[in-house]
Amino acid sequence: MSVLKETMMRRRTLLSAVPLAAAAGAGLAACGSGGSDAQPDRLTYWASNQGQSLDDDKQILTPVLEKFTEDTGITVDLEVIGWTDLQTRIQTAITSGQGPDVVNIGNTWGVSLQATGGLYELGDAEFETLGGKDRYVEAALETAFAPDTQPASVPLYGLAYGLYYNTEMFEAAGIAPPTTWEEMVAAAKALTDPAAGVWGMSLAAGSYTENVHFAFINAVQNGAQLSTEDGSPDFTNDGVVDGVLRYLDLMQAEKVVNPSNAQFDSGTKSVTSFANGEAAMIINQNNAHATIEANGMTAEQFAAVPFPAPAGAASQCASHLAGINIAVMESTKNLDGALQLIAHLTSSEVQAQLGKPFAALPVLTDGEPTFTEDAEQAEMFLDVYRERAEPLPRVPWEDQFESAVGQAMNEMFATIATGGTVTREDVTTAMQTAQDAIRA
Image (tube, rainbow, N blue to C red; front, side, top):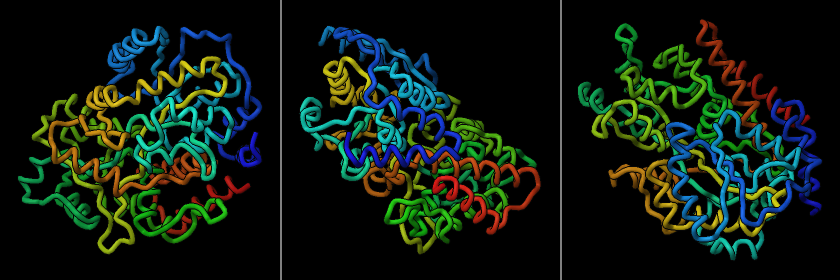
C-alpha cells in the first residue's frame, strides 16, 4: 500500500466526530480483504437509483445486462439501491469485505471512498480494457481520485444543476428568465402568493446533500475555496459564510420559499411541488425533467436556464460537477469480469441508451445528450456540465463536509421555518463547528 494511501487512511480515522466517519473509518481494516469465492461467470452489481423507482431502474438495466451476458457469458446479479441507503451499504461492504463486485457511487464520494482502500485503483492496464482515459470528460474523471493517485472509479452518468421555471407563470407575469441572482429573487417575489398556495421557489431545505451543494456553489460564485493549500477544511471564510446565508435568506429574508420546505428531505419533493404548481421555480439537476413530466407537466410548461450568480460575482459557476461514477470493489474475486462490465456500461452505445431514461448527461468526450429532445435545453445543460461546473473538494474528508455542513444547514432552515432568526454570526458559528469536527 502506498505511503500516500496510508496517510489518507490515517487522516480518515480522525474524522469520527462526524456521524458518517465512524462507518467509513471502520472500513479501513478491510483494505485488501477478500470477498466470497471467485465466480468467473458471475458478478454482483449494485446500481444507484436513477429513475422513478427501484423497479423502474431494474426494468431499464435488465436488457442492458442481458446483452452483456449474451456477449460475455457472465451473469450479473443486479440490486438497485436507493440513495438514502447506498453510502452506508458501501461502507459496510468495505468493512466486511463481502460486498458487490461492481458498484455505483455518487461522484462526490470518489476521493473519500478511495481513501478507505475499499475501491480498486485503476492503472494503465485497466484503462486499456476500458478504452483509455481520454474517452471520459476530463473534469468528470478527476472526481474519481485524489491528486497524485490513480482513479478508483470512472464516470458513468453526468448531471448538472439548472434553474427550472414555470413558463406559463413567467409569461403571464411578463417576466423574463433570470440571468442573475437578483433577477431570480425579484421574479420569485413577484410570483409568491401564499394565499393562493404559490411560492416563488421550492427548495429541498431538509436535504443535507442538496443544501451542501448550494453551500459549495454559492461559495465558489463568491470566489471562495473550502480547503486550504495543505488540504485542511476552511468553511469560515467570508465567501463561504456569505454564500450559505444568501441561500438561507431565500426563506428567511426574501420570504419566497414556503417554510414547510424545511421538511423536504429530498430533491424529488421540491420537484413534485414545482410540478403541482406550488412553486414557480426550483433548482435541480437535469434528471428532474423525467420527474416533472411524470407528475403531469408537459415539456412546453417548463424550461431551465443556468443557476445564476449574483451580478458581478467572482465566478459564474452554475453547478457542482454532479454525477455517478462506477467502481470495482477491492474485494472482488472477478476483476476481469468487473472491468468488462464497466467497459460495457460506459460504451458509447449503452451510454446513449441509458442517457434518456436516466436523464443523464454524457460522460464521454464524444457523447451527445439524449435525455431531452429539446436541443436548446440539452445544449444548455451540457454547457453547464462542461464549462460552468466545479468539482467538490477532492479530499478524503469530502463526505464529512457534506454531512457536517449539510446537516448544519438543515438545522438553520428548521430554525427559520419555526419562526427563529439565523444571523451571519450564527452561520459562522455553525461553519466553525463543522470545520472543527473535521480538523479534530
